[in-house]
Length: 356
Image (cartoon, rainbow, N blue to C red; front, side):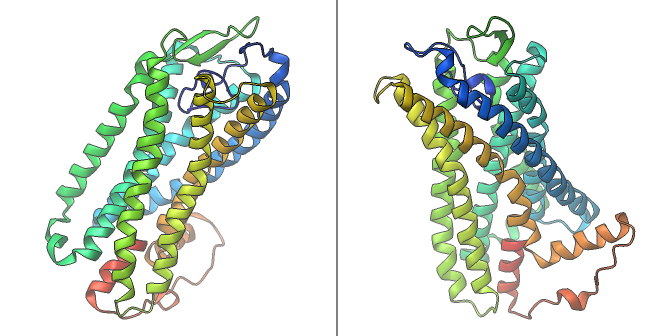
């Protein structure tokens, strides 16, 4: 997607999106501070996201694979959410290097592969979060109608559809991005859409904002606004904790992604001469895109915590796995440590759906 350095061209999740070239009278010297900041800030933060995201999502995958015989639709969605985040973070070392040296050295094939994989991981992660939200809505608000349809076949069908949609949306990155000479530098390459092709930059901005933020946020708000009143009427001691978790899911998603999408949209308006184009405004926008994008990427580290580790069942399984893998790990893993409250069957299903 967009990367460390802001430019006229905005390629989703790609440093190529940011070109330090001459822009309407602004010389490369005007953005030196932003570039130097990006080299240090993004190198550190992307490395941290890669490490934490790999550990958290890797543990989710291992636990769910180990207990695959007990999987339900929620487990399948969570498994694929972790795979999506892993696909996303596996591209970060390439972008970390790109931010550090300010040029793409991995060739045209890797440019298309990494850019497309990055996009696919991003969109599939968002789409699986939407699928989990809708599943929670149906099982809580319409439990008596949909329980019989939450089968393994339905889970597999949903998984295939989400991955196909993610690949389809990401096709322009697989096909049209290329490694090309950086016009703003005397040497080196950038990974970007061809500069003469503006249509894919507009397409990228549209899909990131609409499919990556607006629609998912509307679905979350709409579904959870119906789920919360239903939970409040249930006779379960955990309803307040579940409501807090729901609010956390929506707020974290909005706070991490909205600033980045807003920054990119403002950059688009600047390129269209809808807002002022001066040195200070341009530098602030570049810095804003760099910082907000980096923090948005941390969402893939938080997904395992928000969607998996808050659940007692999953936590128990994860600790049991760690006990086998980590010598000397002696935390009490008895069932009494994780005893759950006895509630009516519908509330039990709700808790399972909300917290795995």
